[in-house]
Amino acid sequence: MLKSGKGIYLYLVLLLIWITLTGCAQQNTPTRNPEYESQNVIVEGDIDQPKEITVGEMRALPQQKLDASLTRTTGLLEEFKATGPEVKDVLEHAGINYQDYKGIGFAGKDDYYCLVTPEIMAERQLILALTIDGQSELPDELRPARLCVQGEFGPYWVKMVDRIILYKEIPEKDINSVWVFKNLAEGIEPYQYEYYGSKDDAIELAQIFSRFDNVNSKAFFTMKSSDGFKKNEAINMVSQRYYIKVTGEGAPMNMAPNIKLGMNVMHIAWFSTNADAAFFPEEIVELTGQQQIEAQKGISLRAILEEVGLTDIDNKQFELVGTDGNSVKVSGQDLNKGILLTQDDGSYPVVWTEGEGLSPIDNLMRIRSV
Image 1: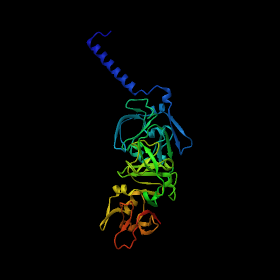
Image 2 (image 1 turned 120 degrees about the horizontal axis):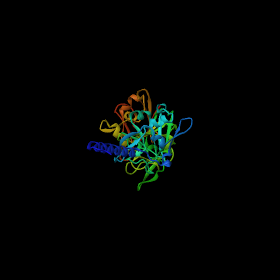
Image 3 (image 1 turned 60 degrees about the vertical axis):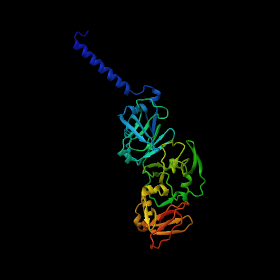
Image 4 (image 1 turned 180 degrees about the horizontal axis):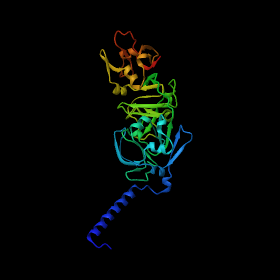
């Protein structure tokens, strides 16, 4: 029995500390549901054999707390508190050094997918959230883990992550042909894609790829929106049931059954494979600005090529081909003397600085290096 006021006071202080610590422990203690804890994430791809790590094992790794905030492509801000291990620690637990790979893909149970490069992993903290807003047992639409990439737009925040795909070699991009998307897609019957109550024209990427000269299935498929957001995918992940919506709200926009509203890349300015790029003039102008030749304003041909990633322009020769088959050859150094116009009739003519002796193009199909 405590015999003094000081003793009682000390007892109460110790009791309060014990209650506080016990409460914290309960909040941080993972779920004890064995079935839930046995859920796993499979690591596959360019490794000798697939590996797996369970939710319980991931909870035993160092846990990072994150005041997560992401902006969806709709502009909606989503905020929550997340706790979980860093992706690099998860891979290290499986005996894998992420720096040995050129790309790392994250896929959810709904087959939604995103690809990140080691550069993103070096610049951003990537967390596989196991606890969100204090919930250690996540709802079905999030479990077993959610990828959190602070500072990146919503399309990178994959839910229900159950696979990590490693890519040891990804072919370097060497863009040598740049297409006007509308003219490239001419003759392809649009698919009426119904999406959240709206039915709009969409072009299947597989049909676009069939018109390219060379598509390497191991390369990156890169999209960039007119606001500067860029997203990479593995080409083999977008070659089936993947579309570019060309009419309606947010178009041009990527569409697929596993892409939920707000996870799309809206107002796509251009996309590229390993060797080809296609662009939307009305969108890419937001990235390149305009150039004036005499009384006309348009998009600098050189600026278009630079924007989509074509390199060593000055030392190359190019051929501009129109939809009517007519063409003109020009040096890379002279490309800045031409601009692409956008006409009300839907055509995209090319005009040149007067006196250069270069023939105009009535409606540009593509620019290719020769």
